[in-house]
Image (cartoon, rainbow, N blue to C red):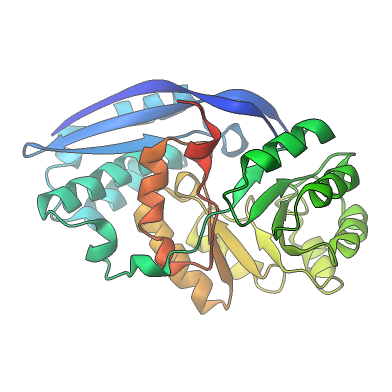
Length: 310
């Protein structure tokens, strides 16, 4: 086994502004794993929101020894052991998870979606994300996204009404709203009621992640479906969201990779929830890995590599 990793800088086309932060670039860690002369690639895109950084990812990856990854014959066993070793550094775990499944597919010369028995024709179209910005820049972004039939609109600041009104002056495409924990209970109620006749498919993470009871209160009073993002990281979080959310957003960098994402899909279905497959700002390595699972979900938001210039 040989494991190499390096940091890369992902340069954003526009300043990417959400309710809690704004960035002109993000860092990602690309892994190259070699087992029995087959190379697999993975990616870790750390998020400060989940206690991760490039430094924490690199430190976590440095704990991995050759004995932990002897073959791809027992991926489940290997990833179970690595999960204990890496702890809450799930982006680092995802980087290894992706590389292992890449090696597996290359070894049998078969794409992962085929190994999973999935039909790529059932892949939902991805939305394209429009970050918080001025009215003029939002118009520019919407025009740039003209080939995408669905838009994901970031909200959570004082100009939410202006953002939606600007969008509707430019396009009548269906939109998905993501508040990134930016609203209070009362504000969320007021804004979601206002959005109900604006061509919105659903609202993502309206309240802070730990405000589950307030989200239940909200769900009882609004018509638009509510989706969890920051409130859900792994399959163990899902049962506690019943009655508060209609669906969840699964991201490989939150969950720890493909293995846990599959568990989340099955758990969400058992709990009667819809599923969106999302992403961080990532390169095509992470996005491609997630795309293999997309026939299993209802919605896709796999545009991370489309938001960067390199």
